[in-house]
Length: 613
Image 1 (cartoon, rainbow, N blue to C red):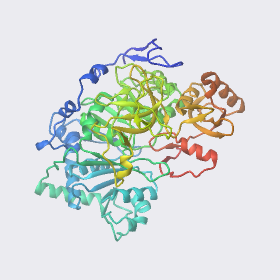
Image 2: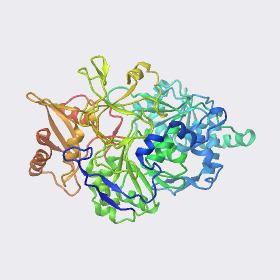
Image 3: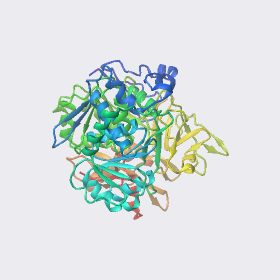
Image 4: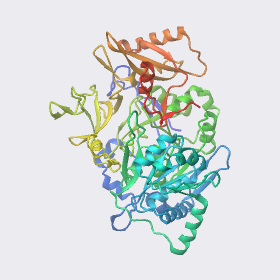
């Protein structure tokens, strides 16, 4: 497992109350090597050379993820292993995946899909989803995943905004979410249903076809005519990811085939993936993480991807980690906190000795979760930061690098970040008409990134003005507030619109949440600013307790006192107990929903809210 050491250099780049860094001796030499050296020597041109490419300078994501392995030394290695609660486990080798995605690409072309057309999935984690994603890319079309738990209106909205030509789904989703609104989707020409029954009558605007029929005909066509992957340009659209959105309509972030350069490099550097590694990403492919790091990144590295279609269950998850001998585990802070609620003893009931790297994504990782990883897995949890728009990991705690609990980590090699001062109008980076990059390690500003990394989104589909507003004077504005310490570690403060203004102080909700989670009774916290006539706003915390704890007035008072001792004047003045905090489907605590409910305001778009199990 490697020796774990708590370093005692608290003064290095930290602030008052910062946890000491955690240094881990890795089980094997990390692929990133020394972060500082890699930062000096790395170039994206070098990373491009790690891939094979296609003749004439073409680049296709599916070729790098599948075909080059399917005909090489990894042909017989399992590419994807599909787990399900009530079905037998199935798997595809790289050679099998290469052939079946060829068939899928031919099927799409036979359905009339052409270069640049958009193909969408509305499916659980299944072979058909992976085949469609990769087959779409092979055909030169644009792949757009949808989360299968979306309701009818969010599905309709995204299909309409995306101008989707072909949808692959199951009969239940089709009957309940697509058929009733088919007359409002003129671009949707074909629906392919993966299970034969229940499709209903054929609608007037979108032909319904059975997956097995389409694939059988395509297989015969492939045998007669063969197939050659489309030689897409590096700057050609490949992926369309809709952001989860809050109150407005979702934004369609467009990514190009060149994004695979970043997917591959970050999967190596941050996830430490090599050929044959056993890897489990718990994110649903309906979200960008489940596509970038549940499909593309690990496959480009030649890893074996474990995927499970069952809902979260702590014992099942530990069994998968044990039985599949998972080496690299990529999950969300919400899932980790759900495991924490069950106690560290449950983790110790399983043999998790195969694990060598645990990584988190989705929202900032509280220090308590990092340290809990040491107790449960014998490993600290390594946080990562990125967005739908960045397409790949931008900031990470890397294997072999000391982890500072609560920090996002350091920037990816090849990526330049800055913390920009915010003007009086809230516009990041523009103060008196000029851009100001903060160099004070204690100063908080908006996190920004210099364009140029390969997976940067290239457009908001159909919204050029919205896209232009995301950039200012050569920086992409992330909307996240952070500070950059003297050693290059970034510390998340909060979303710009989440920051609480109380009695002249700017309070980051993440800091308050992390402090309260240090209390032994607390499993999860969401913090908002509540209007106050004197202070402007006061801090209110919504607390989920651990499974063996019972809410009480005495515990409420105890938590308020605990917060005051830990945080001083920025501590919560009100605390409410919540059995289930609202989360987005991608795992973020929805502070804006907590605030809307507290103030009796409209709740806005709820299509991305995760329903409690």
